[in-house]
Image 1 (cartoon, one colour):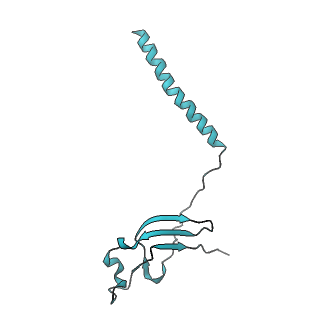
Image 2 (cartoon, one colour):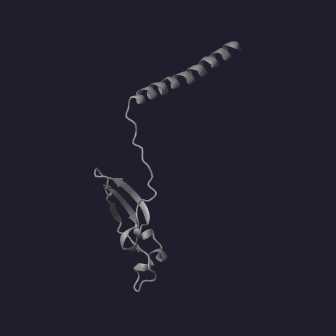
Length: 110
């Protein structure tokens, strides 16, 4: 009976120790790696869209090498009451579905 306990203790110790060694090696390898970029939320961005545009469900976001933000959205996901300004005659002062792809260009502060 004691052999079973000793064997179970050895197996448990190995089962815990081996993954810990791999985790430690992984952490040590990552210590020299450059840190991931940190992003900060700008609550004032984006500004109001032109032409009374409104955006539907966003399906893609990308940032290019010039820091331009490009989004892809689904204009068809907007309800009729959300795009009432696009009817003839307009049913409201706002809004019109934006084009499916929008590019936002950062304004440089001087």
